[in-house]
Image 1 (tube, rainbow, N blue to C red):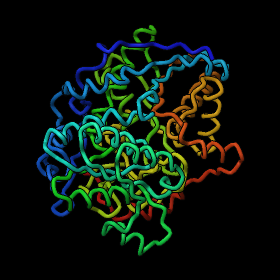
Image 2 (tube, one colour):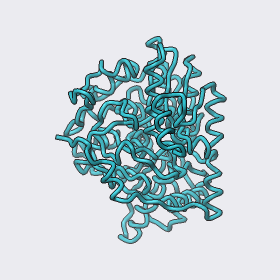
Image 3 (cartoon, rainbow, N blue to C red):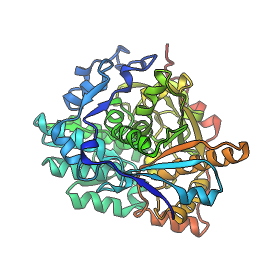
Image 4 (cartoon, one colour):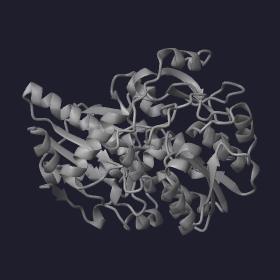
Length: 453
């Protein structure tokens, strides 16, 4: 394990987030009111989200949005995070490629999700909100928001996808330790949950279902707001601290990435590492490739349709312009629970449609093969979600070996897998399988959805 770290100081923590929408060559299509089909405005989201998050969601003018001092002070608990030259992995692959990873697993909750959780909890507290709700897949977002909510004195209810609630009991324990209420979704506590359970008694849940329940509870609870961990523009905005730090650290290393990779569920991870570097592609100064690595069992960017679709299963949210597998898509019970979402955010979808982003779908067994190689060569056991980015980086390195090139590859290690050891147990015992979505299922789920004009 011969890796080299590049460490910044507290003063190097970004003072502003980078707003990619201000510089996109073509702006993303607007979200629509599902009833009138008219474009939404920021104030339309005020009943659901904090006002500041709503305003950030629609901000297409300001390139830089200041990080509040109180948020930045909390960032100092663990930021800046290290950039690491993965020499051990390079040696194991016998590659001339230079592989770097941004290690977001060092946060108190073990993932990048805290970058947005703190910001959104702060905005809710500042507005006088007392209660917040959210959903979580594998539990990384729920854990992050639980910590942030406790810091700002907010009561939090988390709807956790049922399969992950059972697969990952320790993530549930983390949320409860911070003081959050955790409910397996679908549940009998909401109208949306009761309908799904009635129609499908053995349904193990999805992020779309959990979002429906969290939104419903927020809208029916006084002085309560809903807080989201991915997909929307303001969440991606908060995550750009990752790429902004990585940019400075790559300068310290004397290199610039030819390829930037992030795993992809709804977009927070990928956007955080990619968008700051992407601005140099917009200006024509660089020609970096950006790769979103998603599960073969939930391939919205590689096989989904570009449509207007709901962000949740029950149809409570606005219509979002997205690559989607259909809001009623039922994902396979893979261990990368944070990537089991049916759609991609509007910004990523727009960039993907213009060819500015590449996407790959990776089978579950390949991700765990990559994860174990990474653990044995770098000493870090990665989260199943992050392992998709590792697998994509390994593919790029192997391709470079075949072509005789030596690219600089950067990926985001968005979380550790120390609470995912049951998944590793299954992999090492040969009990995990691959699953790919039939094209006919995607076609059936997306039929009838409105296209983008």
